Image (cartoon, rainbow, N blue to C red):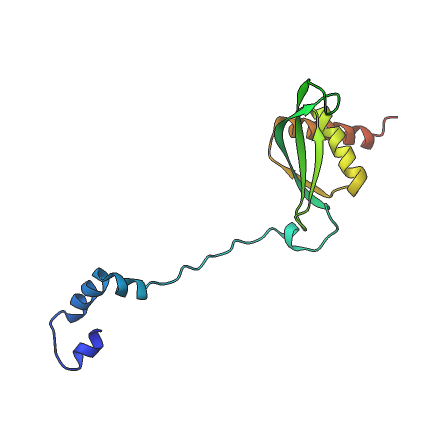
Length: 150
């Protein structure tokens, strides 16, 4: 706009006047709008490298859910939880039913998961108390197995 007017007339502070007009005009403002470009963060290396399913996975709980204790027609319902195992490479999900939020119940779910998919190299979780208890239990077991005392 300014270059067209500038060919015929010299306006003092013409660029500033043209800028005010363009910014106050809705159509002109929209025509000059820059499109937003989303910058993508760096992906973790475990999620990019091809690997067998659940070699590296994340785990979390979902729930509580009300579960019929003695079958479909039962009137007694108890709380149950779902342990979600998410593969970091393929984004596949394995769901295990867990009776409560104790370390013993999670260890049972972890054993069932590993029986189905094999041992996982890395398991990531939030710092929930049952996951901390499981970590402590597995560390004690590792120390006992690695000790020379028989």
